[in-house]
Image (cartoon, rainbow, N blue to C red; front, side, top):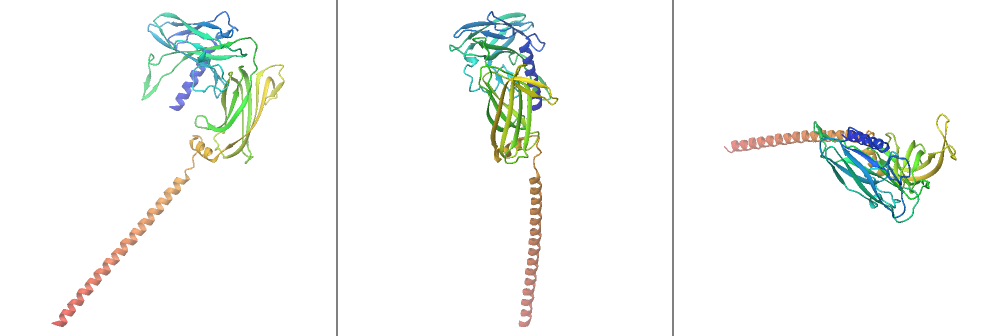
Length: 378
């Protein structure tokens, strides 16, 4: 069931990415969505990329269409952009906590209706009010508008007791800026610690982009090596990631099924961003091909995994074969104790029987003695 949920979530994420790039009617939906782009659109994107002045208020328009023969209730959502553990920017509401550097949260500057009812065979224009912050800033306020059919208006498949309901959503990015001036991203390694992803041990490196600029085409190489035990070494690399402005995420370095060993470690990480033919930083792949990047960050950080933490995570890791030898020894001990109890029981029964026989012999001897004494008297 857990794996099934993971696959459904992945499909929804991919669907969201597709819709974000090119909104179009899909047969999974009972409605379609179209962003009506205003004159102050800063780019030719199909989503909202608005150039506004400080304190400016603007009304955006989104067109919803229902081509079916029944009414459809659409939930309209809003969220600031975040970055997930795969290095993918998410524009829809999720459980990721806002980063500490997020000064302008979309929910404080955008007003919208939470639900829209679409009558059969109808089109409705939805109004969204956006207010630019009073203060001047450079870079992007990044977020997204989400449209999905309200739960309960779709049929739920129920097979052999398993209830599954696939949810699909249109996601329209909403970017707000006050100038065309690009802002360079920043990157910080805030924390390194042991953790788990899908019940598998990892070492998490929390990366933060406190800037109001996107970090695009992100390439990362990381190595973790034991300080107490230099034989322990883990490596990881990934490319073509992206970070939203004012966001953070935990980059997971997998232990590939190995047990976490307590002790002190050191992480070394090199991160590149924004491919650029004239970039100052060169990365070579295994074949010797060079790629130039505009940005580079190098991090070195020591951290420690306690014995309690290692024990806790190892016990939950589904890829680690748990040591059950204690069960074998417990069974042996119980069998041994049982045999001892049987031995003492047999010994006790034998002694009791001997004691009863001795008492019986004594009684017979006493009886014979009395009979003899009586014969003598007669």
